[in-house]
Length: 315
Length: 263
Image 1: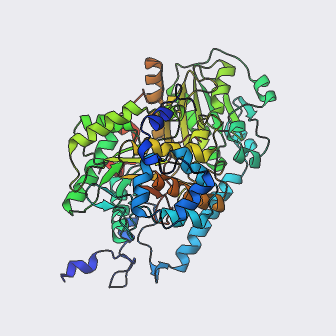
Image 2: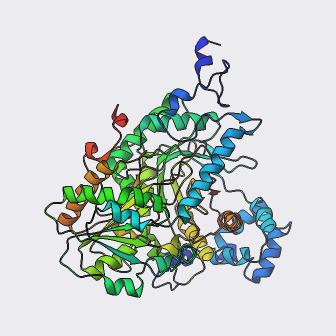
Image 3: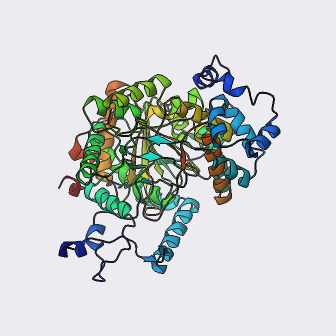
């Protein structure tokens, strides 16, 4: 992916930390695997080298790692982020409460929210995929979530997963935006397929920071990615879907997100065909993202959740 | 310790009185809320119901579109029949690129005309949804767009959204509306999505489309979807674009099928 033609490549090259890379520079991909698994590569060391690792390095080494290797290394890495609470501490699993409703019915959303909270879900974010992707609807949903959060003093953040340009408009109108959501991918063309560019993300990032709504931290972005996104937009430029996925984490990393979520398997059976492929891809994405210093979560469909509503990929 | 506490729904789906206190809340959503537990997992009836829903979702993906049935619903009105380059379901699922292009025979057979818009009924990942919703939505749009030149309905199988681009380009239509079965979920296996693209061409970006989703009996109604689509189409014709540049600002009354939402 030439530097001249792709702004994600430019982002990766221009932000590459050569000092952090120095201790890895002499290794082959196989030696990199051995080093990652060694006791020498402890939590502090892995944090220190993260800025020197490119997505292509992470994807390459994951290909010579077994599932157990991906888990063993990923569990050594801590990526801690903060907004109204702290995410990513050792031994703490956080989860998104996703009270979607097919017509955005506020009572239906409230019923699902109550159910989720009683199950201990929602400390990562209470986030709705809206059925109607409009500014007015986004404002109404955010208002309702913000009132509920404040009324019960719930230590979490809320989000409506609408297009970033809608969220910018919602912020302009004074809406209660905690986190800016956007689906992102690993090439400029794939991001354009989502209707998003790096300058738009920067604008949204700065706007959300200026609201200063976080109490313990200011990680204000929420991104979703997923293997197959670039291929489904015919914007993969011949790259394998895992490497191009890892490049999306370089985009995420640039905006200090609170959360990144790989919607592994969501894009459909044409990209990850069955449960076995989905488990492997989830472990790859989790490993690659954490290695790059990105706070990665994986989606897990639970019986309480209605169908995720497609707002980001075209079938 | 107050008496009111016992009236709150509890996390395990049962109140201290032994009654299902979640029942009043279930009228507002089809999501599986307030499920009872066996230890740390679900009760047998909920597990079996979940497995049945999963099986329905899988079936919806593999059930072929009943074209004869749709022809009957069209009641003699002309329609065109096309297939993508994917010859069967298993190829369709593995090769998205085939589902976005017309087979040679289909492309050669499409007529040309000075149409403002062509509607495509595509099977997508749930033929049940298309079979149920596409013809009623097409009829509802014909009622609303009396001053538009509308091409005959195109029924497309092994089709993805972008197949509509080649259909419209081949036929010379200025806009395409693809009505397509959405990937089935665990609450809904018959949901239809609608994708509107202005001046479509082979290879145009997905960000140049507008989408209405969740059209099914328990979601957005066909009439509400038609009102909203008509609004979007008129705006698209006026602005000469669709996609992220066309913000959905349709009047709320036209947009939402569920009046309960406003109460």
